[in-house]
Each structure stands twice: as structure tokens, then as C-alpha cells.
Image 1 (cartoon, rainbow, N blue to C red):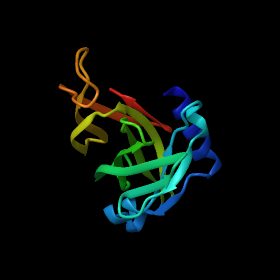
Image 2 (cartoon, one colour; image 1 turned 90 degrees about the vertical axis):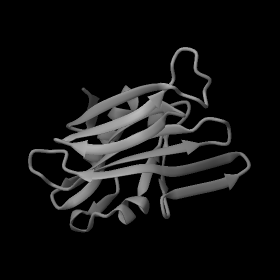
Image 3 (cartoon, rainbow, N blue to C red; image 1 turned 180 degrees about the vertical axis):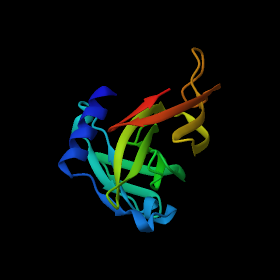
Length: 170
């Protein structure tokens, strides 16, 4: 997870991360934006995919990838009260896993850009997503020690603050 955050920070600083016009931030724009999929062997060597209506599907036999937005919350993540969003999306590569990510999208000098990413793990179930008092709050079911992979049962409410280019769980 640290490698993902470091890689994401490099992309933000280099300007390689796609930007969205902040004045027009909408759920529709977020559903039609690009999102980062970490690599299997090296999380930093992933790829950006362009979603359409919240989905992406690559059905190549040796390179399957399905991406779908799970939830979106709009609000402010900084004291400056600039528009921001939290996007939860998941991806699968043809197996049984559905890996769930949380992405913070922030205003940067009039442009919104994907700023930070955290892996919420495989097959967690999102109950709700919100931005409250500058924090992203994720109410989810995670796996207990005896839960089968498709059926998490442990409720977890996680709050994340944006610290530079990282999401930090509080």
C-alpha cells in the first residue's frame, strides 16, 4: 500500500494524473474519468483506464480487466472549502477477486485531479461513503478471521484524511 501511495504521489507531482475542471465537477464527470489500476507484481506499475458511465471492460483472453465505480461522495477535503470527491471503485481480472480502491479527487488551482489512493482490500462491501468535516468516511463490511472471501461480516467505519498526496486512516 505504501508503494501505491508513493507512486501516486509521483504521478500527482509530475502532472501525469488526469485533471477535471473543478467548476464542472459532477458525478457524471467522475463516472467518465480515468482511474488507476495497480499492477499485480508491482503496484507502482499499474495502468490508467478510461471509464464510461462508471464502467470499463477489457475482454481480451489473456488480459481481462473489469472496473466499476461502487460509490461517489462530493464535498470538501480541505480547509479552503474547495470542491472534492471520494470515489470507491473496484476491479477484477477474470478470477473471483474484486479489489476495492478509494480515490480522493481534489481541486488544484481550479482543476480537479486524482490525488490519493488507498486499497480497501478484496471483496469488501461498501454500505455508505460520505465526506464529513473534511474526512472521507467509509462504512463497510470487511473480512473477519473465519469469513469466506465472498462474505465479509465485520462492520468497519473508517475515516480518512487527506495528508498531502496520501489518504491516512484516522
